[in-house]
Structure formats: C-alpha cells, structure tokens
Image 1 (cartoon, protein in one colour):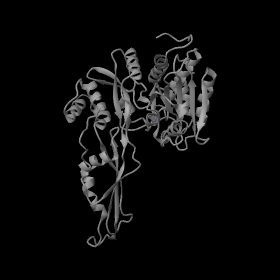
Image 2 (cartoon, rainbow, N blue to C red):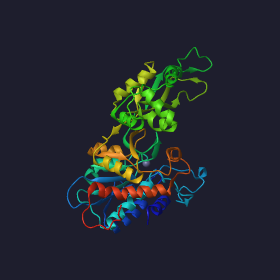
Image 3 (cartoon, rainbow, N blue to C red):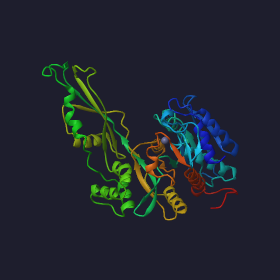
Image 4 (tube, rainbow, N blue to C red):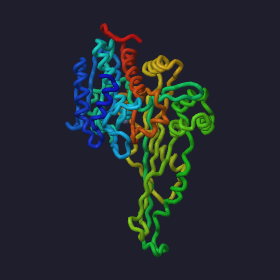
Length: 437
Ligand SMILES: [Zn+2]
C-alpha cells in the first residue's frame, strides 16, 4: 500500500473528536507495522482513546528521532462539502476528506515510509526511530500526547521530533522556501469583567450599566500592542528580506508589499502579541440593565512570554479601567532553537528536492502537540510536512474547513522526505535494500 492509498483508507475511519474513536484506525496501522518488523504498542489512558507507539531499535545507543502525529480530526458537515468527508475520494489530483491536510496525510506518509525502511532491512546505526500516532490532539491531548509525555515518558522520549505545523512552500523575492515551525505562540485568552447595578431598561438613570463600562476597552481593541523582535522574528525577516530591519513596522510593510498573504498569515502574527475580541455577554433580558458584563479576548503571545508580561502588553492597548482582567487557562508559548543536525538535514533535503530551495523557520500562531515533547524532554521539535503543489492560499481555508483535500503530488513529496530523513539522521546498520537517491 502506498501513502496515497493509505491516506484514502485512513480518511474512511471516522475519527472526529469528540469522540475520537481512534482505535480502529490505529489497529489498522499497527497491523501493517508489525508485519514489517516494528515493535508496536498501544498505550491508553482509557481503552477507547488509544495511542500507537512504534519503535525501530538501532544497533547502538544514540539520540531518538520521533515522527509524531495525531489521527483524530475536527468535525465536518457533509452538507458543506462537494464530496463525502469520509470517502477518501481520489479525484482531480487530490485526495479528499476530513483530515487530508490535518493530518492524516502526514500519518500516512510517515507510516508508509517507516514500513518501507524496516521491510528493506534498514535499521538505525545509532539511536531509535520512533513513530507516535496519538489520539486527541484537537481537544487538548488529555488522552494523547499530553498523557503520553507526562504519564509514560520513557515510552515516547525523543531528542529530535518532526511534527505537523508547517512545510508549505512559499516564494519570496524570487526564491523558494519550505516553511518550518520552530515554535508556537502562547494563548493568554482573557476575560474583561465589569460590574454595576441592575435596573429597568426604561429608566437608565437608575441602574449602573456594566456593559457601558467595557466600551473604552472594546473600542481600544482596534489597535494591537507594539511589535516585538525575538531571535525567531530576526531570522524570519533576515531569511526573507536579506537583512533585519531596525523598524519592524517597516519590515512588515516590505513583506506585505511583496506578498500580502504571507504578511497576514505568517509575518503579522509572528511580530508580537495579538488581541482579538471574540465573545461578549451582559444582560440576558432586553429590558434589564446588566449588573455584570464581560468581553473575552483571544490573546496570542510570543514564545516564552509570561502572564505578567502579557498583561503589560494588554494594558498598553486598553489601559486601566473600571474592570478586572483574568486569564483563562493560559499556555506559555514554546520553541526550539533552530540549528543542529535536524535543521541541517531538512535544509539539505529542501535543496535536493527543489534545487535552490531553502527553509524558512517561523513561529506558528496556533499550537499543536509539539509543546508536550519540548516540555517533557527538551526535545528539538520542528513542524515540517512539505507541500509544494498546493500553496498557502489554497490550503488556508481547507484545514478545519469544507472540501479539505491534499494534492497527490504532495503526499508523494512527504513520503520522500520521511523515507530519506531517518537514515540521514540515524545512520544505517545492516545491509538495507533501499532505492538509491
Ligand atoms: Zn493537526
């Protein structure tokens, strides 16, 4: 079975989370891996939410390379789709279905590559190759990567990790780059609450309207906190522009002038804290002046930023007022340094695959399972699943959207990377019968 066929099959397993129901898909993968010589285990916090961990041991001790992924997906409404979201149709050069891009494409290409490597007789010279296909990424990883890293760390300890998060090809200034995620912004969603005194809507002079107290804060949220540079933003701008601009606003404008989409999707969110008001609540009755009102703001922060620092940025925009601010389940952003063997290998692969192509390291605005592996093991974790047939403009509305699909050519590109990378990182023991190149 090649990666395209496996992806079609995986899409046909409905793994919408909740409830996830990842078991049948993982059993299917496990059977194929077992047959090719992998040591596999199903590890689960509860039986109905399993994770697949497969290991190919090396001839000598050394660093472990982990290929990690998740097999659960977000829901899909078939009425909005032109094809069955769980059909796995192959049509027009694409494989269609929920999870085609997020991220059964990577699960399929990694698994097929791993099977081919083991079946060829290849084994790592040093260190282990680890394949982790987790459950429950889309709703917080409580049964998936978080549980694995916290409760059975010895089973999934890695030094280098490749996960989802980036890999699309972008063209900028006449050069082509595969994006690579080195980090993920933090989420510091917060609620701004005001209190007053309830009253009848017909006599506004009597109550103390909590909703009106929030008006200055809401109006101020048209603006964003000042731009901030980090080592990651410096490298990003250096790679694109050939220099690090002293004025980040001017740097962003230069990116925008060349590629507005790249500016909006990647550069703008990377260059500091972002604030987006998303929810509001006050009185539940048309004729009752609210004694309580609140606004929820989605706030994303650069890696490493603390709550105290985030609050300072927030108050630089909305000021202080007759309200209280509280964070809702804050998560500090995380990152890996860029450089070292894994970065060198991926740069080499990019140039081999698309002569002249480079790698564009960046920080993603959203987050994935990468941070669990960074936190538990201090692993170098990169998001990298290469795509060159589809560009960002094409994929941006498809991930979690209707008509999610992936180009057949990109699945083949992924399979090529994941077959090439393990021997490049871990060396070769034995006498494998690998295709050359
Ligand atoms: Zn995903």
